[in-house]
Length: 204
Image (cartoon, rainbow, N blue to C red; front, side, top):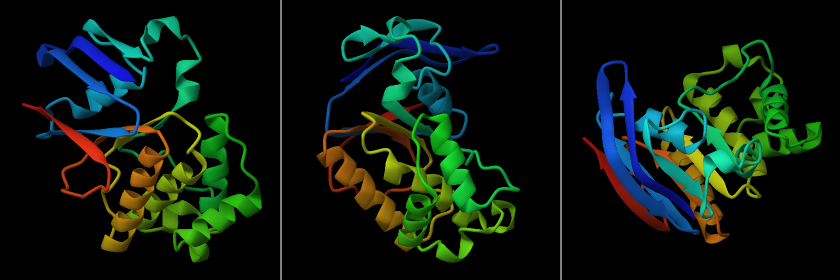
């Protein structure tokens, strides 16, 4: 269970949100909506433990994030608005490096097979700086193939730059992960249907 209790966030002189509370149970997704600048990414970073709320607390499995130390990041996957790819490395190398940073070891063959399944076989050995925006996003999302053991996925605009086929694959992967007992917190401007339990939080 993930729970926010009366959290507030201030950036500079601007309050993004105040005394915000929600709870996300196992097998459930929370979709965060709002206009640009409403605080969606700031909220995700607080949930991921990358920044702290100005008021209130975030709890994971009944304990405040501050009690976990370095253990909490090992239980989640955070995919930000940026793809976090190194342009001079190939798609295959980026997947292995990105997962290694998260403590997940993947071999060359595993990374290549995952890229093949995503329709990116031709791009596996190409430096990602030469790929299209949609291909780069799909490379970043391929990390989720190896992240089903993590209890929480935090995804910032995961459907951006994807074509309809890639959107369908990602929606199916998220739904399957939720059925297996995961929790997803994500932002999106797109109305993508998930075959799962999804609650919506609107930031104004």
